[in-house]
Image (tube, rainbow, N blue to C red):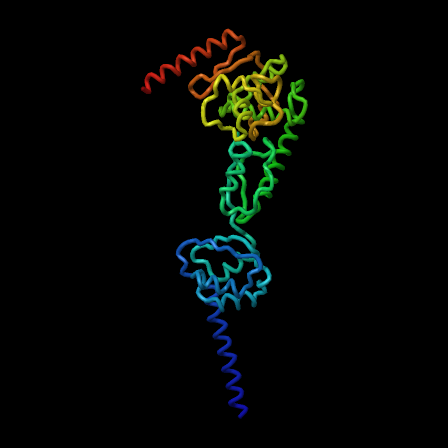
Length: 326
């Protein structure tokens, strides 16, 4: 009798060892997953449900073995919710370690220099894997335009706070390094001027020069007479959908710099780093005027007479192009 009991025990141990070996081999074997796959691990989802779901989706071969392997290795409380990219051929052990690592997928979004708050809010609302309704329209100019990383279901308001923090920190750092004797009373003034520079040119080599023109006009108490401020005063989205008219230039708004003196009350867009630096380090120049040259840049002038000649050149070029296009 003892002999049979002994043989039964030995057989049981051998069977358990064989089962453990086969399970371990399965747990550490590469899957037949041919392509990388994204899996979202919901917050609060248990290992059992996760194992069933992974098997159901064909990501792992056996949910029971996955669940057993996770619990035997003590990783059942280590899983972190989020979006994961599971590589082709990953073993069940690889998947377990990935979920425990918290190495979740990061997405990218880019805020374009010169966008208004309305444009940025519309853009963020269009991104489906973000969450939360934006509580209030961000103050114009308060967001740093650049590329941001975010995770699935990150709150839009959290993203906006990150953008505000980046802009605030950069602006204050640059303000401390500003050129002496600028006709700007505060970092907010610098942000306003930078937003105008941003809307006037996309050319890197022109920003400081245009800032120099506006700085000269501010010192002489001349009106800035810049079209983007007129547009913003008429439509806070920054887009009229039509060319400016002479009536628009005479229409009184707090932003129309053909009517008011000095800077408008707020920025008219969200300027990038280059435009902020240009506003705080304008090019030393005697120039007081500039106008588009028809080739994507601007013609600059010191006197009104020279400026009028540049305007006439532009009008002549535009007329020639209109004739050629007919």
